[in-house]
Every structure is written in structure tokens, then in C-alpha cells.
Length: 93
Image (cartoon, rainbow, N blue to C red; front, side, top):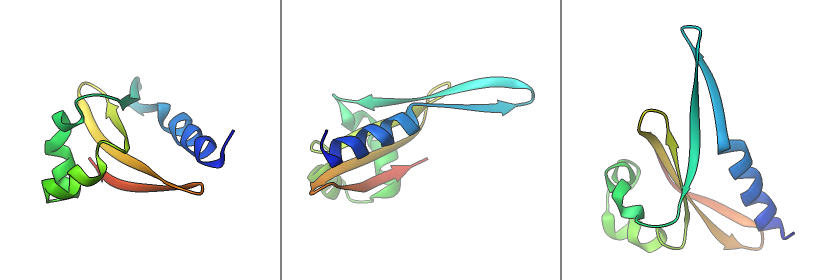
């Protein structure tokens, strides 16, 4: 397994399921990887990066995740820059 793949896998595993307690009720927040139609989250992407043309530079080559709990609450985009380096390009809540 390559270092970048290991780091990406670890990031995904960490983000996969988060359980929070709120007023004694467990709610499950799920992190889901977005493969297609990433621009549907443009309203969130623009919160972190104000220029759509800059978002276009990394969005398709990046790996996108969304946090869901009764709808989408957050997103992030991570790019593989090579040599085991991953870069967080965009994150918004």
C-alpha cells in the first residue's frame, strides 16, 4: 500500500462515522465520498473559496466528502499532491 493511499484510507476511516449525543438521543452523522456531480455542493464550496474558477482548478481531481445528518452539514475536498502529500483544499460547514 502506498503512503498516499494509506493516508487517504486513514482519513476516510476517521471521517466515516461520527456518533454524537444530543439530549440523550444518539444521532449518526455519516461521511460520504462524492464521486459525481460535485458542483451540486457549490454553495458550500464557495463559503471556503470565494472564486468559482479557483474551485474548478482542484474540484475534479480532488476527493470530496460530505458530512450528512438530516441533510448535508459540511464538505471537504482533499487532493493528492504526490510523494505521500495530501492537501486539504476546501472545507466548509
